[in-house]
Length: 279
Image 1 (cartoon, rainbow, N blue to C red):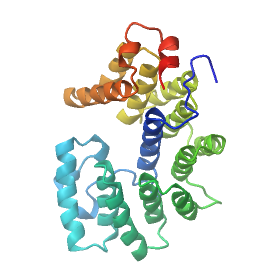
Image 2: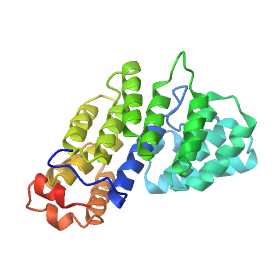
Image 3: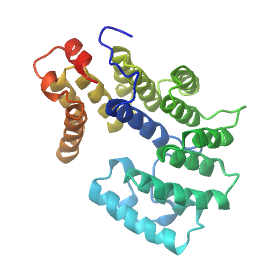
Image 4: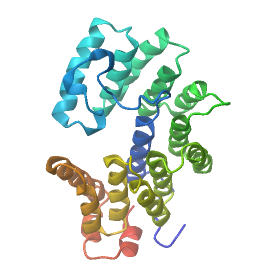
């Protein structure tokens, strides 16, 4: 560990937060046929014609209502079930999302995309060992899917198996070089071990990629803030977002740091001193 490392060896809120951010990003991109974002699909509804991760809270609530109604009408419909589970997870309803995916996988036991989504739901609900097994079933060894490798790495990081996790991320990057979601997950893996400077290097590379989204920038903002450079972190959190989205990101960032009893310490201190003070 470096001089500016955080003592993450024992469980804590910050470690849990970093792990959740890592898993969230990995699982959001964990689709086997390129359908890693919820779109209109078979449940055609105009308000779902945008990636679900860019929706505001009211849009997510409406999406849950409309897609939930479609699911109630036909719970065996594969695409509706997949979309509904994704939206539920975005709304923090992980147990309900898992219950939906359990029904979908019963009807589609050999479908790779369904298995991948089931693994996402298991991981989000904390069933990590089961998620690993499900993701392995979805993977094809002769033609491995980089999204599944990244998701597997995120689960391994949650289990504290960081060396194995990083091997999975690098395997994913061999298949999909410079993929920002994988680079971000690799960076957050180093957050979990307290290696903030290494984490920042990977995350800065990730946000330079054309397909990087706000979740990657949020991760970078968190890592920069943890090193005591909050003005810079706030600027990153606000970048390329609408005013309301930017304010939500900044509020979230402040919450993460203040819950670590670190907000006051970060102001006016260098990153090295502030980082050591955070538990």
